[in-house]
Image (cartoon, rainbow, N blue to C red):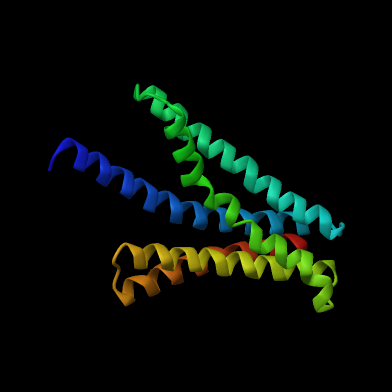
Length: 170
């Protein structure tokens, strides 16, 4: 394999890794934000929507910075192309915050109170986490059994957040 082919393979691997790990991580982060916010009492839905989106954005910036800082430590040049690629690779962290935020925003249309909106957003975040993990396993060529395992592990992690939310609020 030539140097160009190796570099292309590394880029493709990094992109696939970032696309899905960012989505899984972002969904887990969103679920944690919803669970944590609910323990602070009731507050306007708009605040939860903004909190979800801003937290996703801040963690996206942190991940981009960490990757770029790591690249500098490895003495890799950081041109605009590299910065744009890292920003794009980590964007699923923000994308994963959008469905729970939308769930909160539309919850009044479903007749849900603020507490119900939080539970809906938490369910959407956990479902997103499971979905991202299955998509990652599928893209990696996993067998149906391996995809089911990925889904089960991520569902258990998501349900742990639900249990923590229940434990803290009661």
